[in-house]
Image (cartoon, rainbow, N blue to C red):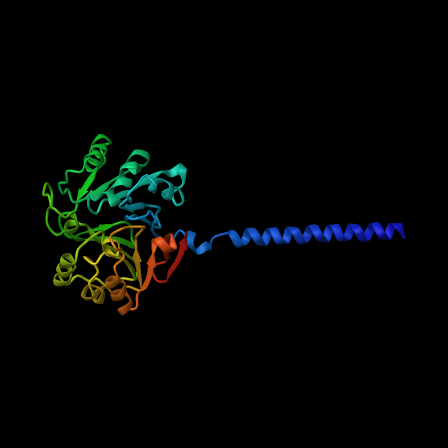
Length: 296
């Protein structure tokens, strides 16, 4: 009888341990990200939640990192740590759309801490000391630069193309009261999936792009100027027709995003995604299907 009692106790202990192990295995499997997000043949585009500013990271299937703008603070460094391994701190292409601090500041820190292989910007003149520091670091590190002064295409790999749509003329050495007019606009094409990055571009530039008969149809639009009423006209949206509209925005006193822009986006039935509400907004695509997830 005593032997049967110990046997039953032993069976219960073993059964309990097996149950605990199964629970733990299920828990850790649940925590694992969807494997499709790490498929070597996929493209990833991450709109980073960096407060009131802009920063987007493109990661190509051949493991290139393209960074468009860097947000208003050094906080971009901590954001990038989530997506770029510490053992491979490399930015293949850094793009500064225009030298406003909420796009530029973080890029200064990235230049200091990362290996940057190439920089693209317009060469516009601006008195901001931060802009001077940014250019000085580029010169000291002898980083090759590409001036965006016309429409051009950059082939990243067999499937991935980056098209620069604006500006279409040289801005080197020119100064503007408002840098937004000269903000770089580019389109990322990966197979059948397309993204449009608009920086802080203005309605005036949107009209120019329409007049130029640009093919503006995309799946994902990075909404111009944090949803300001100075961008994202209904006329422009009817040409772009995005499924998703990403607004990079934080706490601000500018009224971003404006009610008019939100209404325009609702009229074209775009799904509105805001970084202040969703955190990082991550798109993964195989060139046909498009997946979206968020990371708050």
